[in-house]
Image (cartoon, rainbow, N blue to C red; front, side, top):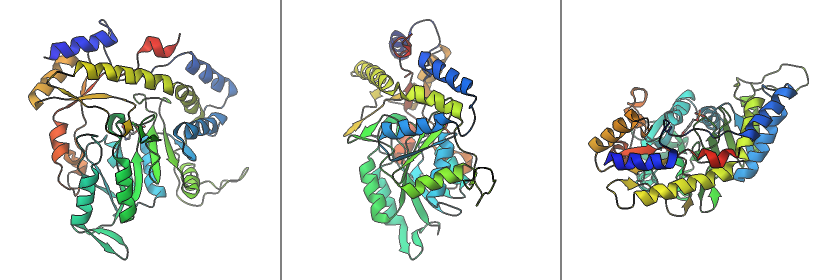
Length: 385
Ligand SMILES: *Cc1c(COP(=O)(O)O)cnc(C)c1O
């Protein structure tokens, strides 16, 4: 029954106020560093907080290079550009993702081609990826061609859905074998690990988001990580309007982007990153409570996949039927408990309807049954004041 779940959510998050899906936890540390940033006068691009945040971040995820961006979407776009994805190319990705993944592909002039997800991880299914490559492509001198469209397949973008790590080692091996670029959309995956390694650090490029609803926020922003020095340098150059370094001259050697994170956002990011471990502990505690509650219920709680450690950014359940799910969502929202259905699969959106795809059986099935439950870290504990 809906009511039992709602009562349980109320027992976690309180009885009076609306229960948001996920809201940031901000406290004294954030106030202090923002004030420090304001007093310094450096609030816009190229302040000292940006470099500090990038260094802190690269240490936190154990990646040699981290380059900040204005958003996760910008980081994805930049990641595709520096991996030479361009007009008429194709990128294999999952349809069950936030629309930004495919918007970024489209910005480069490339198109997404959709591969099914695995029901255990909700991320890109390595077997479906392998099957698509074996059945639908042939190698040419110019690269790997999709037989259905005649276009070159350049890259693969798996996404770590709700922070649950996908089977990234298998996907990485397939990319190596077929000579495809691997870009991880780890926008939701900060703090999630696969076989002990931070997700987002398995491919050529990984990206993260610091939007207000993510596990840490910078007000807005993103990060591109890579182990490749050349990629890092090119991402930094292209995202700072391709300006040639000089004390006063304005020389630009190609079409660039204004994608670097402002200093004031980086300041907020530093304070939030400092609390990541606290958030992770708290979120894993909430997840354990949800998992325990759903143990003997008709709805299935989506548990941590094998070999992985999830940040449990958003908790998710699978309803036994679409009607029951839709009733639960409507009824809960009327009671100010803001549960949400999973995204409409991207292959159903008008902009991407015509894109090529493999079979999308699990994508279509789960899109009708999945619900995200309120998952904010609990305030009293995280704010510390
Ligand atoms: C949030 C998100 C993004 C985009 O990040 P923004 O910072 O909002 O631009 C991209 N991909 C996924 C999967 C996301 O959840």
